Image (tube, rainbow, N blue to C red; front, side, top):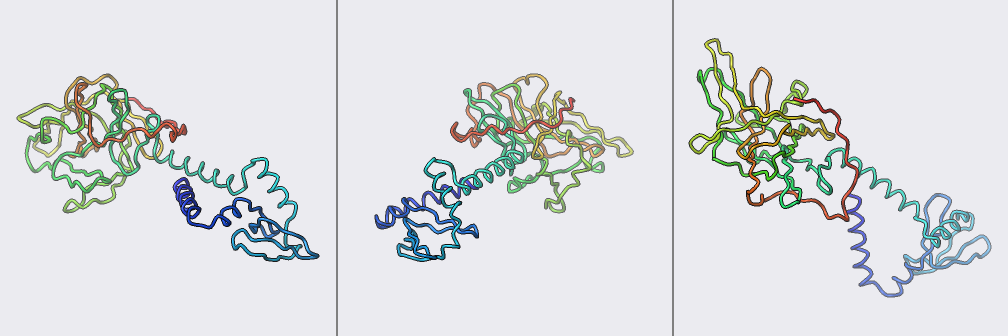
Length: 327
């Protein structure tokens, strides 16, 4: 934010410099500071002392003005001029640098860096880190299952098995292949816990009780092809209504990151095929809304991904992982 303001200010000053008279530009360039005892200052190109008054030429208003001699902090005025001559940054510049560093630290905690110049976007739910032609790329995974509202990018939709519906159900997603295809066999997947909302009445999202759900509830399953669809799992319901689900869970490692993110990584390379990130809800079983992806080293480039920032704007304040339980 601060950098943006600075850029706008610099641009504005550049435009003003083109249209302002030459005398104004030169006056501003040569301006010194008469620092007052109350902490404020006057920009002046020159001044002279006359008794108990100081007469100075204002660089801002381009006219002669006067101020009482006793109002001026002469030691601070002399120090500022010496520091400026020596190239020492002004207090304002130092303060701006501190504010920028604090903002950078806050942004880094909220949006962890996953590769040089590449950070997780705060408004996304599930991201996959891929590498294509030696270039890292972040890709947002689509949430599949049921009637997913495509305008709910910032929500995690949830639905559980209805024990009354059938004694046996198959959890399926449409299509033979996911839109996102990983070119690496061990993709890193990042889940944003802050986007933790579930579908309420008529599909309207409502805030879930996040404290009741463990953060390491996300896993990877391999899907099975079935007549143009992908089977995520099978559900069996016994006569008393108890639900038993079967999924082809892939061994994974879960890591808690800063900024409410969880990193899910396969413990071993994935074979080419179709997969999904699933959410296990304890006694409620598996969330029927899943995030699908495929593994295909020869797939074409994915579209719509996030690429690293230019090297000149990269930062090195990558936050450390907090917890690393193994599953």
